Length: 61
Image (tube, rainbow, N blue to C red; front, side, top):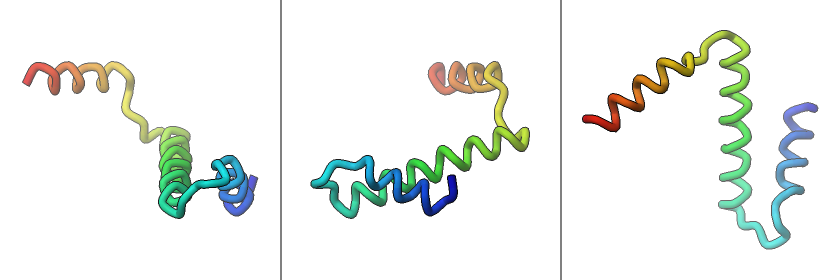
């Protein structure tokens, strides 16, 4: 699916009374998710164990 097709599909899934802010928020969310998947595909992800360690540190500080 192209970027344009994804954007159209994303907007079509919103309720009829969606505001411009709703559209922008949903598009930004989809962009962030797609960026995250791309980074994971490129090996830029953070290992699960490291995330658990960092959360543990944040919660005890």
